[in-house]
Image (cartoon, rainbow, N blue to C red; front, side, top):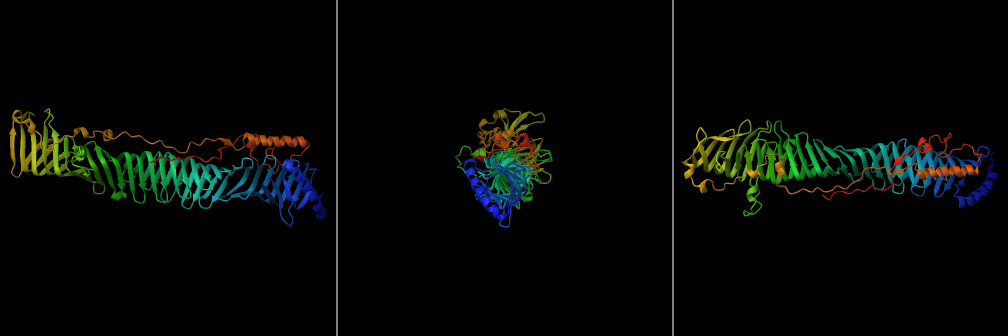
Length: 611
């Protein structure tokens, strides 16, 4: 039955007054403007069909929610409304939703929207095909794919999404992608706060920029500042470097990253690895700083070189790479090891410098232990500064130079406390193809003590001499021949007649107990290391169900109340009931009461270590 316009105005006033009285007690859905009104009691008790007219759309309200549409079916007995065509739903001043179709229950306060659904709040816009909106919990949910746009952060898409209105938090699950002009994030789950642009990543996740690729399995990213943390299995790739660590901070504006605990920096071009427990890397400056049991490994075909110091710094592009080791620097390879206050390596030229910076007083009892020292087979070489020259292409040792206070010592293996010794101002050593010393030249004020033996290895005397210079030749690490130049003054004395207090040259120090004989020995005199405990994001554990028991009880109660009041009601649309032609898009999980899990609306806790 249709009413003409004059009669409708009077009836509508009476109807509005009656509904207003009922709403005071029952909080009924109220009609603000109904347009053309039809009563269809025969189809369903209390059914009223409202259609927009030239004055505007149909307008209904319920407890702070306004809804406008082109046509609405209001089931007054059920406190339920269906809205069709250009539907707009508004909650307060912050939440707006547009869709082709919406059904809403005043009893359960659960809304279902479908068809080009758009949900907007002050900081973002959500679009999807179907959306559930629970006003009791102030949460919305989609499971058929959706997209959220936040201007400064970018566009986020996912298969499943939830929005917590009180905390202004989105939770995206399954094939989540955040696209920004400057970066792209792919993850399994993303918790996103629309007010701040803060994103929390769970599961295998990547952040890709034009300069880097960051991977983590638990992390945080500030989409505004483009900074973040990785808390589990974090890895950053900068061109030819791969940076890994337990806890990692990264700033994509500066291409900077720092990490704490179990750090590894791999250089894929130079085949080198640096390890430690605190590091910083600057891509723009091609530099890496690392400390706390810092170890640099240069991978060579036959024999890798290991270098340790309190602090390591690697700078420069691959073709101009420099490695610096500061404070108590040591290195080890099977045929040579060394130690110094500091080490400087120029990988392009193959020059390694061992230096004592002489920062401390000469009275310092540890000054000698910082003087550069090299061990090659059975030979120990010391001096104020030592340079080692190698071929950067073949990785073969070429020569070494000792500047000032040069000293070379080897123990005489057949005597208890006998040492072969040579000292002078400078030393030049040459290596053979096996990286063993084959010749050493000592120049200026050369002094020597040799334990002289015959072809049967029998000691026949101790040779002590002075000369302008001396050349020593080696075979398999042992002295095979020596030649003195420029006014040599030498004497060989039987061991029994050689004074014991004269058997060591002035400045002699035997430092074999400092010699690294394995990679582990590089750390022998390091202080105990206590790694900080990393505090960060907990593992993601679902704590709440969107279609939970509370919601299902509300739906069941609405059905019970409805059945008691209208026992002969028709199969009208009702969220939670068996689907009719207009509610067929309701997920089967609701009908079967199977839970879809989600996390609560609380913001994750993120703490970083103090380093």
